[in-house]
Length: 433
Ligand code: URA
View 1: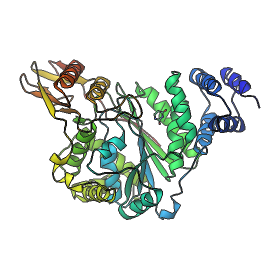
View 2: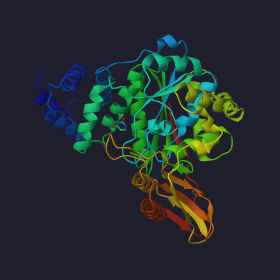
View 3: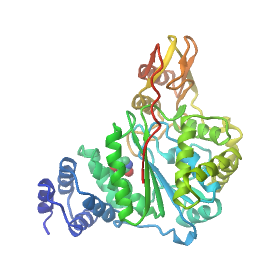
View 4: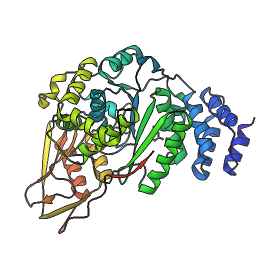
């Protein structure tokens, strides 16, 4: 089989067979298919697309390129949750302990953040002492005893994705729905959870800019998951404004803890409860109304917070941060920006907020860059709120005054204040089952 022919077939919209896709992926993983050929094929996919059957075959070939975990010895259904990435998205820190407190098992293997959307691993690592580099045996033990565990992606998992993603970054082929789908889903399949809940984001701070694009990606991911024998669902959710009040690793953990303490209510809490309820339905804890109630009880009773504390301790972290948030890292310079006028906040461009946090050191532009766990922004007002002249709008946290001033200007430019409030945007646009 000539790789040249496969590139030409995809370019001419002739579907590849499962065997042809396996040959391409296996050859590339072993280093026998050169980067220039794989780059050409990725560009053909980017321009011409793939059928659902081809995307499913690609995803399974990428899954099989490395190690796959076997969670079956845990003896209870496992449920993974994945977000396609957004600004201020710390739902995993809230949802995993809620589901664990309700008897679910939540295995999480996440990547470090690259670019302006923060990675779950970076958020957990901002807790003093917390380790995400655990052997699989310890991962399984913590899952069994506590119900949730978060580790960094193992180097042996899906090597084909690692190599393909690096090429996509260099060849302007990241933004392809079948490639995004196969890249995300191969890792989810290799982790081995029985159920997978996807939170597909759309809006200015997300990969998918419109709800229609997000719906196409969600449908495809659910199809691909089901074809691989998994129970898979997706929520399509709004990412036009930052999720919650905090953006930045340690600051986001603090916000999640406040929600688990029952101190904060709003869109982030609502999304976390909706995701948790869906996960509980997927593992057979009841219908959606019952599961929503079960999730709320776990939150309000403090049982979910106890699970988070147990998980932090089991992973070597200082669980007393949940009682004393001053133990979390905070960058030394803090700059509060006040409203220049009276009115209503009608939008906060989340992509700009993400880029401003990246500039503060809360994200990385290259894989091995250090991040500042105490950097970021805390909003005192969100979309829909009244802005009062002279009252605080947000505070930025950074290492120097110069960094804070640059970020503050960028964030201020991303906020629109108008005389009348805007129509509220639906948080959950659609559920794909
Ligand atoms: N996340 C991934 O893991 N892969 C993509 O292609 C996009 C987002």
